Amino acid sequence: MRSLFFFCLFVTVNGNENENENKNGFDFIEDSYRKYADKNTDPCDNFYRHACPLGSPDGLDDEVFSNFFRDKLEKLPNILDQYSIARDFLEIDELDGPIKHIADFYQNLCENGQNTTILLEQLEPFFSQFPNACNGQACLLYIQKDPNCQRGADNLRGTIMEYLEKHDPSAQFFEAFRKLLNLIKILNVHVGENVQSGVQQTKDMLAEMKETVLDWIKSTPWAINNNVEDATIAIMSPTIIHENYTDTWLSSIEELAELEISYNECKITYEYSEKANVLCFFLVAMKHNDLAPSEFFTETGAFIWYPYISLGFENYYIAKHSANMASNIGFVGFTIGHELSHMLIKSTVGDYLTYFSKVSKDCIQNQFNATCKEFKEESCITVNHQLDENGADILGVQLAYHVLKKHFGDDLMEIHKSLGIPQQQLFFYALAYSFCSGTPGKASILDVHSAGYIRVNAMISQLPGFQKAFECSGDSRMITSATEQCDIYGKNAPENKRH
Ligand SMILES: [Zn+2]
Picture 1 (spheres, rainbow, N blue to C red):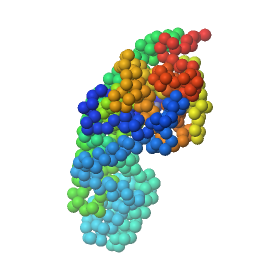
Picture 2: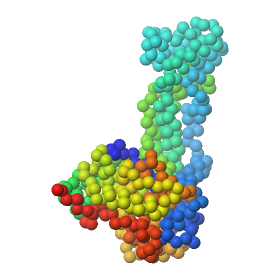
Picture 3: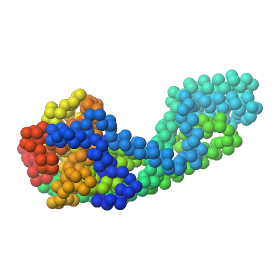
Picture 4: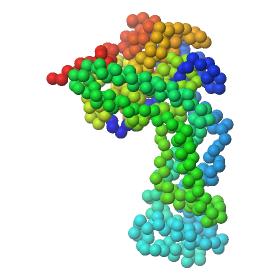
């Protein structure tokens, strides 16, 4: 898939061992563990349902962080209130077919004996593209010659509906303007919460993973045998996190200010009459129809738009406020590993990689199939178009786990002070809280992702560290559902010799 919007639901936490970081924030992973993990069930039986029992929130991180945003936005000064175009847009956006309301304004001007020429002249350029509507100059000005203002307005409304409403030239701007206002709100929270230290941690984690995977690629038998180490490294290396939220925040406000100037220039013509709002907004839309706000900043989730990885706010927040590095790596680290891995799994001819191991493809799908069979809830499928996401899960979690091992060394089984569980266990809980949903798991044939409950159990059963962390017996379901270890990259990866 060359187009490269891979949307993925993830969440991750940071762990700085820095208790002070937590003073003004909450620890999403630890809070979730305390509230939802079912301590009466065996984690080795069905880890996902042990961490996220039926009845827990549906889309836990989305729920927690959308509530967080709502609360923050209520408390932060609303920067948008300073802009009349943003204030007025709330009403304009509620109107059914805003453009046709321009005719109401014509009628109002006409009935009050005011000048209607400017309005009609301002509209004419947008009809001139339709030969039957406007031939030559003054194609609307005839309307004002009718002394009956209602008839004139009806005529204008009819013309607008016939030509503009069918191909509303402002529709794209409406959508872009909505996005711009939302983006400013989201970035306002980024700035208000000052998640810069979280951003730095995500950059550090990505750098560490890139270094690791670089070594893995160089020692991968199938890459060596097919001479694609350099090509694979060349794809992976440019990947970066699109994280400069302060610059985007400032440039977005500048953009809004520019629109405000255009809007007010129009409003001055009509002495700031409220009734001119729709017309003025329409004229701004036509003048700035190339408005395209950044897509890279969201509340939750993550995606890669090569070479940029976009991480939702939750990742930076968790990275900043997690009191423990194991939960940070399990959530945020996995998210980054997954997005980076999208560049390293080839599922279609259109993907960036020039070559990929067939044995690895089969290995990935076998694991998801086995997990589906063992843990199926309402429904479960493993199909070809999920290979890219399934592979990014398996490789992504391997990268995150590698970072975890490097960070903790021999202290992986050290007991976490307040939770009373080994640090390593927290990594697995954090992974589950990226996908937590308390309703029975369902598969969607249209979704390129496997269902969340399958993703978590498939990834975890592939990690040898899980059995050790929870001291699972060899006949427990999480262990028996593990298929062959999928070493996609590294010296243990398949050969795939050329024949
Ligand atoms: Zn993905």
